[in-house]
Amino acid sequence: MIVMMGSMGMLGWLWPTLVVVGLVLLAVGVVALTRRSGTASSGPTARELLDQRYARGEIDDAEYQRRRDQLS
Image 1 (tube, rainbow, N blue to C red):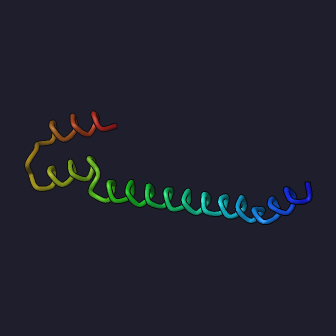
Image 2: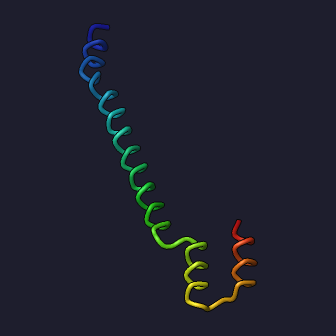
Image 3: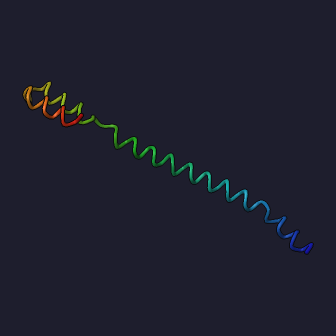
């Protein structure tokens, strides 16, 4: 029984180390997903593109209103 206590004592550092490694990996995964989703939305929104097309005269008032209502 003393031998078992000694061997468990030697491996006592393993579980806290695995927990810390797991938390670090989880944090890295969250950061990676956050950065990936942030780059996907970095372009202009649909409303901004519609406004730009209207400002350039590519679409008329009625088409602009119709498409803006669809986006809402």
